Length: 548
Image 1 (cartoon, rainbow, N blue to C red):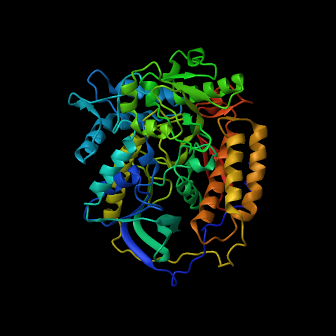
Image 2: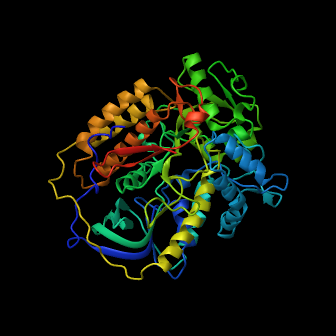
Image 3: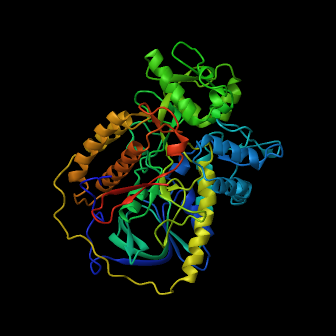
């Protein structure tokens, strides 16, 4: 197929080896969410580790996770059931070996969190396990009611800060991976103190999270701009499944509020989805009703909104015990109360929003990517665990398991490799004058609105072709521009990732999991029971696509 025109430069900004500071470490970890910190803990303490995060260390998608972490922790549950639930949700595209590995390691990883100080909610001395959509058993460990991610990250940050071989650098934006002789050698970064800096590393682990800011309606924090996906693509790393963007079915929909996630655990506790007339509609769409997998619930909500000509539906918990509702979900109760909604007495207006990027850097069981010297873990990857639709509360679990694997594997590789750390001759594009003034916020808002309308919950060739043409126009001048601050770099990354999503979604001419094509509504296992893989074309920096 034809490559996309107006390709990006190899590096976002020019640099000269003799004019910027240099930093050296055994293992470099880009991203300080759960996957990044778990990777750091797994590195041999005799090795030096630098962890970079572009914002505060507590500002990651991991910290915003509400529902919990899934694992077989009840004697009445079993690994086979968790595996089966994950495979069913994944729409025939999960890698069974990966699913088996992650599910079987889950209890150990959760016990590690407890040992490192995580206070999960308990009842009578045992973990108080909840149930969420797609799960056949109560197996979700949660903390502080609906603030599991915040509690886990509190404990992880505290534990990591004790490890003397780990240096965490906050407010440090990673622009690009450094590559030389076909291997990753570290990263080009920008921090407030030193400006541009080259961080040389024996091994690098990418843990940069997701891409939710690419959509107008999103549960993701502001930092989720697809930086890791984009820098990996520019470095020639293979990515796959970029068409699969998961939309969470229940996001708070109130004018003037941020699009706050309303955790699936509400439905696990008995909340019902009703339309504007108070009609409970989920039994009409799936026998599992509100506990169907996320893709099923999302599509049902969108259909019901269309049928009722209303911009949202409602979560109803008025039939449940009010004191239990308020104590079980204190964070959601407080957020809704700001807008005059009592979650125990009033219906909560919700609609779908972009939540989780299923596609990403292709990795093996140890987190190794297609680029030697580069590993990856967490939402930036396509590990094979989620397939075409992620099962609820498997994301924190994936971050833990693959973080541990990638950290150990990168540690071994750093110990086995050449002990010498040195600067290497790299080519950068010539320095240009800084870009003329562009209204970055206007382009970014236009992009997120375009992606929401044309490459959102429902898609068709007509809408996606329109999106592709508009994104190509923006790319012609934005990707070639030279910026000197994060807002510009984030926009370049978002445009790069948007191109990959649109091209992959156009390629997959069927509906599967979170990818619903109204012009190809059926699932076609014979033709499309496979992955769409993308990487930059070395000849002209365009997109090269393969199936497999």
